[in-house]
Image 1: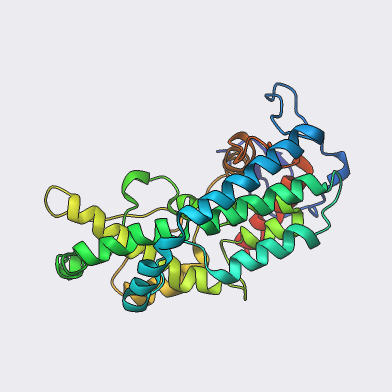
Image 2: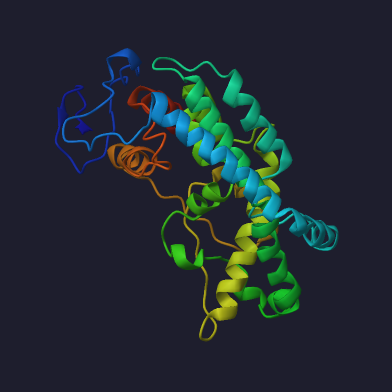
Length: 304
């Protein structure tokens, strides 16, 4: 919508710009958001006894998985002492925060039942149990290819990085899956808005964006170049405004391009990622009212 000088509006190029008028205040009635939209596939969420059975079975499997991977902690921690914490696994602080939040957050209706809280706890513990396996995979790359990764790139090819298999897709989406952030919509509006904050640093995400994300991006880009057929200029796309200062310090000659996207497309993308592709079949998708409140707060934080 493009505004005329007298405040009237006419159809334009799909953008939302107000000229000569003050934009109306943004209001959102979460209670009016339906839990299921017309044409949306039925939810796969488990409840009651079915959820209880899954919790018991999953708890047993996570216990067995932890024991099976227990021996890997020794070589993993030894390599951590040499190469540092691998950026593809969650840190202890985030794990503790999600475990605590699973039993302390009080989201709006429909709320979190004891069964869903138990299932979220199992998902966090399962991620924690696989840390030595996934961390060793990253650290072994450093053992086998670290020197080549450090020495192979001339300065002009270190200016941009690409996420390899993600190509021009959102780079940090896969990064969030490796951590626990993708679980945050199941903890309610406040928790999701805080954990999916792309634009601002907080006490809980500073290490993730300024340290782990920058190292993850750099090493992934170098691995991509190592496998590339000849020199290439690398490119990475994402929403990681919070990491921009740290990336600028790490890559002083890099070019940063900011894209302005139509608001409805931004919201559509968020819905696709957080609702249309549910993370866990047992939990099903997060409630629409929670997503609506969290997405609006996240988008406003980015716009500021």
